[in-house]
Amino acid sequence: AQKITQTQPGMFVQEKEAVTLDCTYDTSDPSYGLFWYKQPSSGEMIFLIYQGSYDQQNATEGRYSLNFQKARKSANLVISASQLGDSAMYFCAMRVHSGYSTLTFGKGTMLLVSP
Amino acid sequence: GAGVSQSPSNKVTEKGKDVELRCDPISGHTALYWYRQSLGQGLEFLIYFQGNSAPDKSGLPSDRFSAERTGGSVSTLTIQRTQQEDSAVYLCASSLAAAGGRESKNIQYFGAGTRLSVL
Image (cartoon, rainbow over all chains, first blue to last red):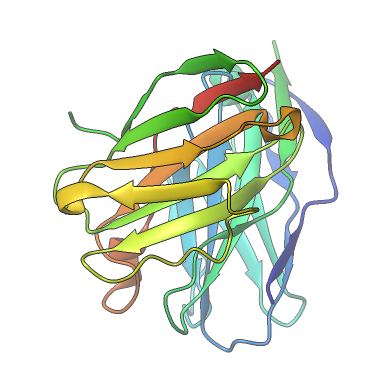
């Protein structure tokens, strides 16, 4: 079974600062993908970034980057130059590549960006 | 539309009534997923459809929950004899493919959800 752990229920950051949201995972499957989603108050889950377990480089998408440390089984999301619109819930998720498995989600981290 | 569409956005019902929640996936997406999100929790997988294959129902919490997908497109999640513990946001997602191929094809895109309140 897969498990995602997000230990930060809430994080605060000032506008324009960088912030790191923690995510650790557990799986015995050697091939898997890690995802981060953003859920604003509107409720929709918005895909942010993806990291494959065999990818050699850390994923980046604009202001989002994923700090992937395979040996430590961590996949932290780094948001650079925070904006007020980044205030939302952030979920880390994993999908193993064996069979037709679905996403396993963590409980999320609420990020609040202040002016 | 361009994204995953869910209706209704909000549903209030009385305990014991049946409810139907609808999901219209992104056009061309063959895989469709239902998740449940309870207050303050992450998403819990319910059921998954891939093309014409038999659905994976392993996440359904009880036999009061069922889902169907007609014509490989629109899906309906039905909850019979609703209970107060069924109150949650029900999210639907779709993806181009469920497994195999490049991972980028397997990104799940979500709708805004249906907020179900059982009184």
